[in-house]
View 1 (cartoon, helix red, strand yellow):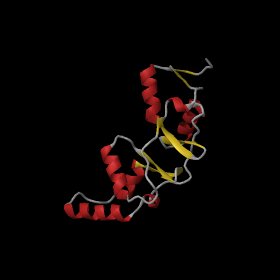
View 2 (cartoon, rainbow, N blue to C red):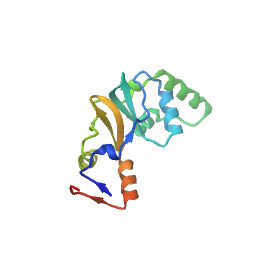
View 3 (cartoon, rainbow, N blue to C red):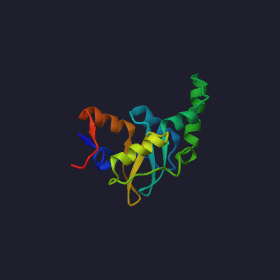
View 4 (tube, one colour):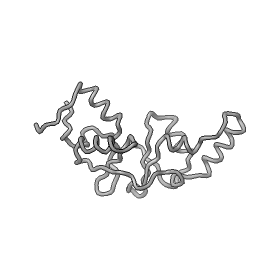
Length: 147
């Protein structure tokens, strides 16, 4: 059973896929199309510098039609902008040792659904609301006591 007082390292996704601030947005487009995740941490020299959510990315792309001309224009745009142009900076972070209940409080108070997990400034994982839901579904419940 998931104990809310255990460290988030027990339920986080370790070693998430990342991008660099200078990557073209076409790379993020491919990542979101080829994977089921909705958040991509932005890392520079091993250090977390931001995050790109799928909703932020889709907001950037908004306004393009599906015609072939528009698709070509969209591709040009995605190749001319980089991650740093749309990433969120000043990201909330957790330590692998932080308790699950701390993460739940952060999710409850804020409107985002992913929190990068850093150890000494280096990205080691990501915790999403889906990670928590999957763990609860797997465990069929949760406890909040020291065992």
